[in-house]
Image (cartoon, helix red, strand yellow):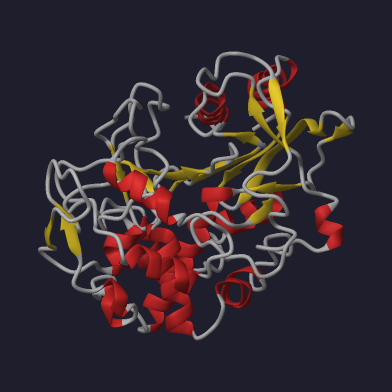
Length: 392
């Protein structure tokens, strides 16, 4: 495979930067565990004219979920958890759940849950929890907002207590809704391991994989390498060029203030190199972070028949289902590469994304800082051209 295979991809990424859709972008493509292409262009800070380098760090938001999911599965492999364990064994406040009745007009219009929430429900976003972000005007969305469940001063234990006071959106296992489930898993890891989430991550994942630049809180040297976050000029229309600087997202002092919540659903900073190391450890060809049978289980559908990944006001691909912590592409949709069946993937709110295709033995990573960018046209183009460059 020669450099020319990757030139169309590199040119497309350069165009995204030049046209003002991305501030800067760094990518890596893997065949097996070998990195066959790395590319970096654009700026880490447009206003300061700081070129983006391979060692810059990124807010990865929901890319954190892959780390949390791997951490849970390490505990499962140890026999300390089981996927079908009711979580009330470890988090008793989440037992005896009440569920909003269909068409409920107030939070008191509930019925008892038909079954307890399990670890598997949390890992697949079928627990009945919500995010309080993606359904404006919905009853539970407003309840999450009023409870201020996203305030960073909440510990993981306090977050679970806040969620315990609210009903579920649906009966566990019966629907799919992107939610704070992975944050609850963060608390489950703490209770099961007896460690803080950050310490467990470091001891079991970051240190063994030499992921030295992945953390909840940055040191001074890392802080100087944190890329600036931007948003599109028109957040409702990702085809409008232009970027706006965001200095206080997700909150002032984020990633620099010790003592804030270590959010298993979206709290990490990471680098291109560290993300590559994590993906390599989830692919065959060397020592893997998890057992082969666990990796296979992560990459299969765990949703009930008829369920798939759905977001409000977004196109639905019934073939996009969910494994243990990440989406699984059982059947490519119109925006997916034709050969992408079997792919495992997810992304983050600041525009980062990763994917592994175990069937083809390939993987890709894209790191950028465009807020609410995951799912924008550049992500579709990146994956299409990456598959083509890798011969698929």
